[in-house]
Length: 91
Figure 1 (cartoon, rainbow, N blue to C red):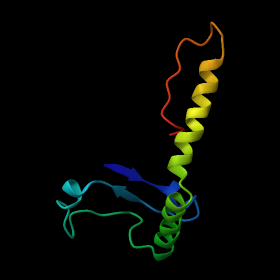
Figure 2 (cartoon, one colour):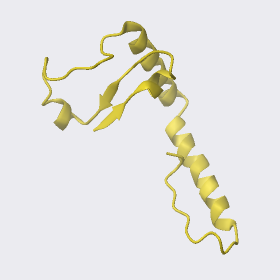
Figure 3 (tube, rainbow, N blue to C red):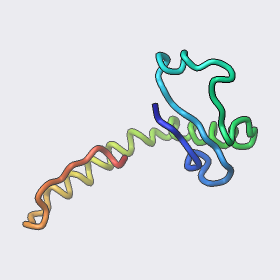
């Protein structure tokens, strides 16, 4: 389960949410949960637009591509100060 907060609305309005697979989400019924920011129509519209932009602009794919480029550049630096490079995209 991943919790999402203000970042999904770019700080414009308070938004909260969670992401989980069906196995987890299907155990939650009406009234089993609550949210400080739940039900805010403007917040939900902003969050929806943010998620659409993530998908349409392939931001996760871009993160992996740019991260691989950054990792290769760091590995190419020949310095005794760098002992290890670990990377997973730009996450």
